[in-house]
Image (spheres, each protein chain N blue to C red):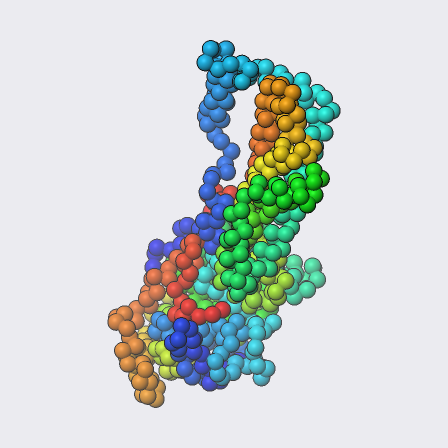
Length: 284
Length: 303
């Protein structure tokens, strides 16, 4: 009777190994940060050096300094920022629509086991369809309108979020649910105070995955359909044979991806301070 | 005030029926503290779920002040064994205690008063701003008790609340419950597998038979009202009562019902040996552990 869980209070959440538990979210300790900077610098050096060797033509791969200088010059223009704005707004709008639909449907369908079972086969069929396969359909329906970009973005990111919400709702702890019912929490109160926080770690994982996919599809749509944004800029630069500019714009989309991921992780950390993946070792 | 009459619960699933509780009838008077003991797997949890209105009985009734219980009654609070899963990790200690009061739509000032009072009563007045997972197991269970007290229940149900805390903490919590019971004059139904705990805490010990469950015996605990971990537990009368309950449970496990007619009880001991109070060792830590496994309660019944 001495081996009591009193010795391990940190484990008492029942939150379990949630999807967000995969990677540690602690800020990197100094040594790792230093190594990261050194690695990045080495990469840039190699990129700088390789085009100056006979192995790779500078027409195909301009040196890092040239690309970054092009990017700097470009970012001083209004056209660049309006392209960034168009990309970000299409991305955000698509993600927001997917989020709202996935949360509403996920909570509703996830809460009703029969409904979930009935829809599972359809979901498993629709989910693997690559969004890019819908490009002709989008053009057919909306031409080069913003709506065709949104169609692709929403379709791709919806499933990422929806599936996670389903997992989250299924993770509801029966003891917690009985507690809520015993203390008079009705259906809505349980949804708000119990189901929602339970599903939140999963939901945010879904948002992180969905945000990345949404960015990919936004750029893809702009490249292929020609809706305004960074993707379209890349395709214009390509047709005018401006290799450094193509690279500079590609780097810009990469930076956008980093920003998106960092942003979502920050939101996760903030909203899930209580979750075992974030709170780390608890002090007693 | 709490009447359980002819309660019966059978679970049916996959073509077979399991009779968890056969025929339970007992009555708790206003302000009584009764303990319910029985061999492991005898349907104590099932009974508690039916009494708390979380589960519909197959037959029979539960009534509170003559009103039948069909859902969780507003003047009844429950403390579960698995404190770690019963408290919400995303809320602070204070938030956990206050949440049911918000749902009761109590005004803010009254809520604060109740939460402060309840936290003070369980000795956690300083911990309101912390999260449950920052606290030890015993403290977490105190939070769950505070949440129950703040709810201002007339009936407090406790489902093996101290099965997952260490012996030292357990003794403290037992005394806490006796103190709160007197201070707030509630009716308390305390389910436990621990005979000593039942005799020490209760005014009355209701002994259940092995599954399918009936009331085996109803022992009045005529120990003095002021109890103390040292003197009460070493009193000769305590030992006598303990032995009496122990014998009843042994009889129950060996299939002898009060009427001697429980044919289904034969072999009900299921080779799990003596009725040592530490029996559900396996359950230890379910209050603290996370992970996908669910508590191995007696029945995997529907919620």
